[in-house]
Length: 393
Image 1 (cartoon, helix red, strand yellow):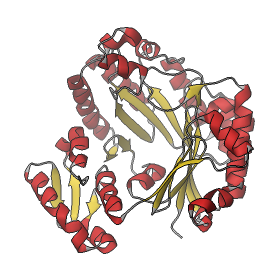
Image 2 (cartoon, helix red, strand yellow):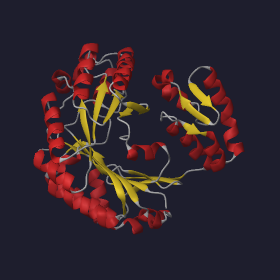
Image 3 (cartoon, one colour):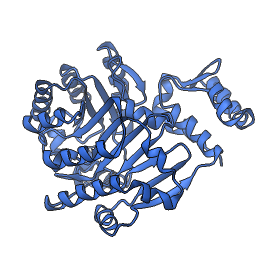
Image 4 (cartoon, helix red, strand yellow):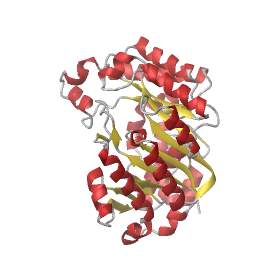
């Protein structure tokens, strides 16, 4: 069986950043043990949870070669609950010999002892939500940490043995300027992480700050959010800086030193199977997509009542899978292989999209060489508009 990925969702944070559009929330510590217990129950009961939906339980016995514990801020649970969940994962799934095991963390949420215990569990990659190295910007969006704590976290992680660390930065935060953005980039590079993610602030109604910007309000420092032109310039500033430092841009938002690309995230873009555990977690087995109930309270209740936490389930048609092949695969620097698509879904299924590919290549937005198709660098900032063209009406 094809190796699968495993994702565990921990939807809790010490504070809710104003730019966050995820389903994480601030909760009392007493809630954490019940949630961790529900996660362990879900892992134990996967065959009976999957059965009513027609999901072949054998798919969950595929070797797991990537694990990602995300959120939220998973480290908020503490080392004991983390150990409990990881031990249950190892009993419930067949881990491959070489596993990329990522833990998301926020500066200030994990001390040296926590990191030592996490590393001893087999967690070998940290994803650190740095976001900025300017304290004014961090404070403006409700972050509880300072830039100094990001430096301290990375230093502590190195000391206990972590040799694969990823940092996230966001362009477009309140009060951010071209100078402060370059300061954050230089600070991140000074830490020499193996991986860097550069995200643009999404101005949408799903976050408090995004909604305030859309409503032309003043709360959450909305009037200090730089415009889209700034974000585009910030992105184009980052790309050559990271390239000069030895980082390869292997996906629209992701850069890595050679050999340190995120194997787990690549599963999403390459339609590989992955299984989600926890409130709001999504899964894909190659044919079906399903998602658990988003509410953490409801998730715990469902597991306590021995019910399935799955709230959404659908089988994908060949046409839908082909569309996903295009708009997910094209996120990657290497792009997609049309010959593979023809073998997988048939020449007739692929043929209608060839005119779209030809037109976009003619506009300089796609690079089409033999059977390989990829975005050109000038297309990265308009990639969402390009992906829309690979969705059927």
